[in-house]
Amino acid sequence: MIMSEKCKQHVDSCRFCWMCHHICPVGNATGQERNTARARALGISLVNREAIDLSEIMDNIYECCTCGACVHDCVTGWDPVMFTKETRLQAALEDKLPPYINKLLDNCLETGNAYGETKLCDRLKAAIDNHSAKTDTLFYIGVDARYMACEQALKAIKVMEKSGAVFTVLADEPASGGQLDFLIGAANETRDQMAACAKVLDEYKTVVVYDPADSKTIKQLYKEYGIETAAKVMTYTAYLADAVESGKLSAAKSEKTVSVQDPYQLARDLEETEELRKIVSAFAEVKELHLNRAETVWAGNVLMAQYMPEIIDLVAKRRIFNATSLDIKTIVTACVGEYIALKSVAQSDVEILSLEDLIVG
Image (cartoon, rainbow, N blue to C red; front, side, top):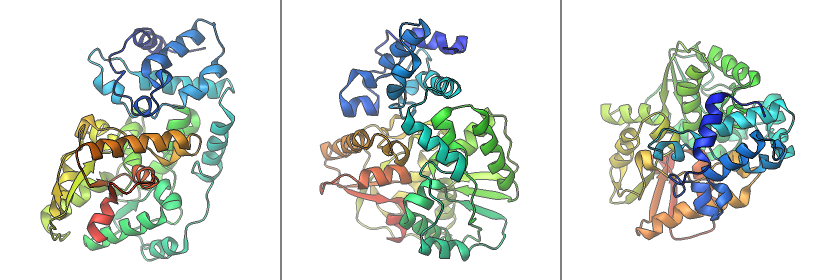
């Protein structure tokens, strides 16, 4: 397999190391050694040494959620996410992607989202129509909320309205490129989709990005791809935190006690942790989960649930177990993917709320 020398160095350094063995959310949920950075590095090293074919390890390569907990925990600076994503790109170039990944990839290229959806629910379409006029501020919703969580997209628009914002929502919102980056990494198709999105964003002075996955893509990955955006790009949580602080978003604090589920894209990649707490604490008391802020544990997403739903269910159950261990009764998340994963678990011990649920009910 063709792999950069940098990635080969990281693979060879990680394949016998146990430093992050305890931190992988997928490995902890499944209890399987294969779901660790070490095991993934071993598989890639076997391919590099021509002991096995690349196709033999690809199922395992796509069991990684790329949350970066292993990278964050590694004191020696190795990066399993980097070599995992480079392996995905090489598999795409060699036409050795699993069929289920090819299907998601085709959907991304044909419809702009991995789910192959093209129609919005009627209520969301109507809400978007109400904000179709061009303003200085674009509210960028993202594919997960638009196509897989219509009610949350509607509530997010209501929250923006409640904050007094004057904003635009696009009926034909371009894909950020985040799903392509996850599926095949730094391919030309990924960069082209990102560049097309950046061109649209540049038509606005300010862009408020709802989904943390898109926030990471636009605020961090675009720079890595050499793509510049002229607009001021803000995360939804940073925007709302400013609105709470300025009094534009009114809050009546209840006696409810809740715990914050930090999206790793905000907490680790963008180093944003206190904005979410500023919002939540305006509406309720906060009791911290074990492993919070930059130490957060990923709780699942919609994209990976398309091809490994049982494992995503286990990941979400594990995070709920973390909460019950501390007698936590309510979790609030600002990530629509984690919200869907946590809500999908059949249980009655922990109430799962989105940030919008907390603010507008």
